[in-house]
Image (tube, rainbow, N blue to C red):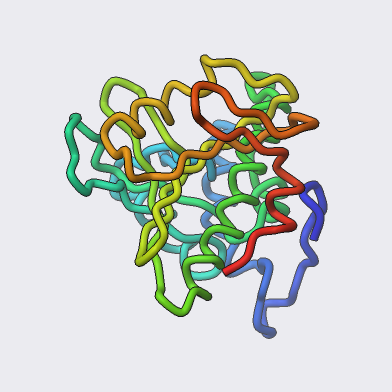
Length: 218
C-alpha cells in the first residue's frame, strides 16, 4: 500500500487486516466528540501524542487490537528526565491517513509527517522482529522536549532514527539526535528525510528516506 492510499474496507464477519466496523467504532466515537456531538474523549493522533484519561486509554486499547501498537520510552542509562507515556502508532500509514480526524487546524504537512513516521516505524518494527538475534523498538523523549523518533536496540543493533518531512536538512533538525548521541555515544544516529543525496552533518548521517528503506536488511 502506498503512503497515501486508503485501505480496503472489510466486512465485520471477515478477518480485517485493515479495518472494519468493529475496529473503527472507537474512532467513530472520537470523531463525534471532535464534531461536538459525542461524549468527552481523548484519542491518539498516531504520531506519538500522549493519551490521557480512562476513555482515551480504552480507545487506544481497542485500536491496538487490530490497528496499531505502542512504543515504550527508551530508558537505558537515562541521564535526563524522560517522559513516561508510551507512543501509539498505526500498523499501516494508509489506515492512519484514512482515520485521522481533519479540520481547519490540521495542516496537511503535519498529517503527512505523522504518516511518514508511521511508515518508518513499520519497517523498523519488522527489522527488530525478523532479526535472528531479536531486537526492540522504542522512542526517546525528554521532559524538556528533545526527542528521537525511534530507537532500535538489540545484540549488535543500536540505531537512533529521526524522521523529517523536508528536502533541506538543517542543524536544528539534529537537536534530538545530538542529545541522544551525547548520552549514548555507542548508538548509530541517523536522520531520514526527502533530501536528494546522503549528507554528513556534525558526524550524523542524513539519508534519503526511500533509498534507505529499500536497502534495509535484517
